[in-house]
Length: 411
Image 1 (tube, rainbow, N blue to C red):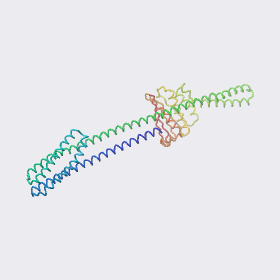
Image 2: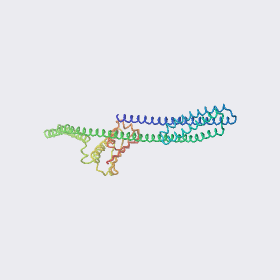
Image 3: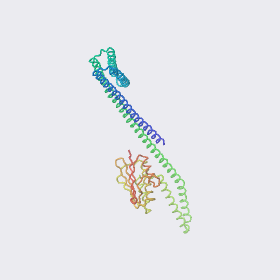
Image 4: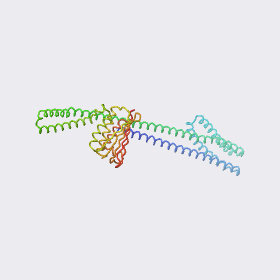
């Protein structure tokens, strides 16, 4: 539950971060585009006003009409206002780029404003004195135009530098997003690994508790029912000695003795299944051979073991686990598969133990949910294998039996 909440929290934080980054990029791009459009629009308006001023000057020279000359200062005031707006934008952005650019621009802006002022002054002065020189007017106007073209270079530089700033910010944001994705991925993988480890520990603890309970139940059966049955058999033997001459009673006592011994043998088998002490004495394969030799006498499923290619001394815990897994498969085959034949194959490749089980029973639909519902006995098998980090593959088809492959890495 905690794992799910943490993963959901990481996903929410990551989604908010990505959304914020996309929003920032989109907003920054829109802001830059709008500002560029505004700058270009102001520049175009300045160009239009300068062109209109040139047309008015040409009309004045051709027609020598002073009323035309009075319109030029209005155009020059409009140009000054537009240049002031451009200056405000450039100064605010050049502060982000380079102080030298800001200083150069400020100097250039002062020069071009002075040239505009000089042009306005020349027009107003000569208009009042009626001593107007056309060549002088063109000279002053040309001087202003030269400085304006030089000023226009700052427009190109502004657009270029402003775009570069945006690109750098965009690239930095992409790097941050990439690093955040790596961090989020690492955290999720780490949490998944912790969940797997916790799950395995829980399963191992469950198996340990199960083992201790089996040992306790086996000890109780041995010390309780086993002791009582042994005592009953001893008393039956005494009765056989005391009443041996009575043939009818002797026959009944022998039957009672036989039933008691069978009960004691059944209790021993149950005790051995609960706590297989044979494993520590004769090993996994021989213990299984003894187990299935008794099962094969039932004339149901005939089991076979092939262990010729198993060349490892297994740890006791692994032997017990494999033994439990084999008992689950045997029990599943007897209860559900209706198989005539089943086979266990053990072998190892280096320090990896392989167990293959296959039978010719009725099989089932090959879906994981089929054996994850704790109804076929394969659920316990899967949990046991997962508890030690092993791998398993269960395949089956209707009327084509069951195939189980288990790999345990002893490293």
